[in-house]
Length: 184
Image (cartoon, rainbow, N blue to C red; front, top):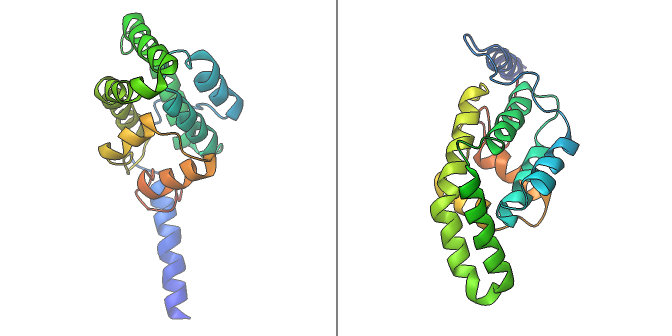
């Protein structure tokens, strides 16, 4: 009984501390709270230039994070703003990405390795940095999954949105607790 009480008190204390971080204000509030907006961003507005694997994985991630979490809502809005940022992703960059994507789609057997290398060299570092910035600006104590996993995020579509959600919970938890997005 004493152990159980101690565990419950620890959990309550942890939740309270995580939910009320001193000096933390969400960069985007209230943020995005709609899966429809996620689909619009990644499957409609930006799909012409984004790697298809990333567009799929990002749409799943955006739609899978809790819709009632200030940190998740903030991250969705932060990343949507970055996708619309023509300084970070200028038209020439987007067009080059689209050209590489089109070349790969026209020649999937011969273009696969070159396209994936292009994505890994040019897009993966930028989108990984965007996610690090989003976690920082949206009151997460945790970080996105380690960089090497982002090679997969940008080049390999996960089989289901549930698998994307599980990967985020395990490797990119906002509160740095594997298996949970955020306890607060």
